[in-house]
Length: 116
Length: 113
Image (cartoon, rainbow over all chains, first blue to last red; front, top):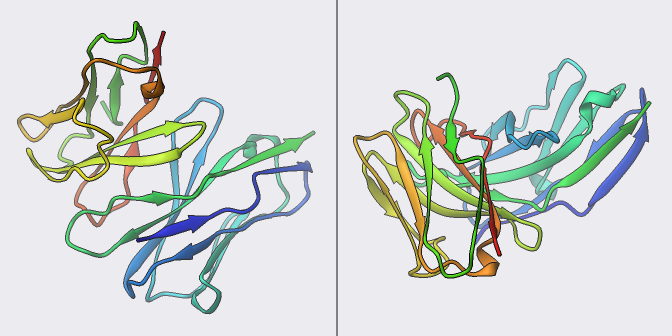
């Protein structure tokens, strides 16, 4: 079975601070995808990024960056120079490559509050 | 529409009643998923459709829950004889194939009195 652990439950920062959201996963499969989703107060889950298990390259998209390390089974997400609009719940998730069923196993989520 | 559409957005019903939740996926998306989000359990997978068939129903919590998909498009999740523990936000997601990222609707907030 798959498991995703987001040990941090709530993080509060002041605007312009950098913040890292941690994600640790467990799976016996060697081929899988990892995801981050954002859930703002409006409620809709917004897809941010997907990485596959073959590609450990870090990725940067504007103020967002992701660090994937298979050696520690971690897929951490950093927001640089945080803004109030980044306030949301962030979910890390995992799916397997098996067939076409890419059902997601989610972590419990991290509530990020960015104060002005 | 451009995104996944779910209706109703909110549903309040009495314990013991049946409810139907609807999901209209993004046009052309063959894969459709239902999830449930509750305070105690987080986000849980319920059922997966590929076209009109449901090869994975492993997340349905009891036989009171069922779902169908018609025309490879709209899906309905039905909960019979609702219980208070069914109170949650029910989320629908679709993807163009099973290997592509899932796009979520706004959800249906179900409250059982």
